[in-house]
Image (cartoon, rainbow, N blue to C red; front, side, top):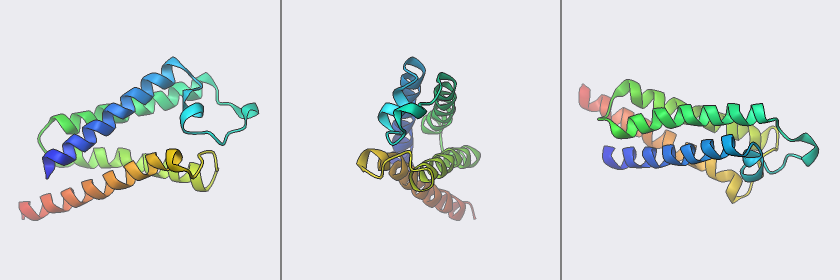
Length: 132
């Protein structure tokens, strides 16, 4: 159970690394891939793109650390927190600001965060049951 969770978290971490490199390399990358409902006149600055890339890199480090180590309660909670922040961010971008289209490409980050939060929460509950 924990092996597959760690594999999933590691894969999402590596995907985040790819997105972070893309956002640093090409500041328009986030707008081209995720935030497609932003009008061309309202493009984000290179600073915003680098900030987004820095967040992605930070969450990638946390997720890959979780994936590479034995199950640790504090690390699992920190990893789950990265997905909660991502879920809240993408939910507001989709449903409040309407900058991310509600299409399969725009839904993907929300689904990944939802699945990850659910799976990590379930594993955390199972871990606590075993410790009692």
